[in-house]
Length: 125
Image (cartoon, rainbow, N blue to C red; front, side, top):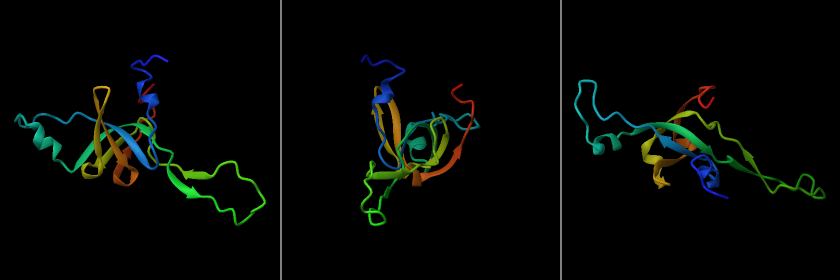
């Protein structure tokens, strides 16, 4: 299978309660026109970005004690996350793990570090 710009992120699997976020480019200058060095904008506690991929959620253990004779097909069930692909996430920078993939910068953020989600129904339409 050839890797293209459209399918390169499909190979990534986000694990557990984590979310893959593409950070928004912070403004390089203030409202008054002063240019800020990258070290200033990187130290901000709260960042925002777009949710690219979402993990399966929080694992819920399946109890076999209720019906031990019943075979279960799925060993682990998940409680899904609130974040969805395309949401704008406001998250705590200190909990984010920054990484670079295929020349693009991303952050892996646990759902517990996400403070707010803005959902626009027609973001990818």
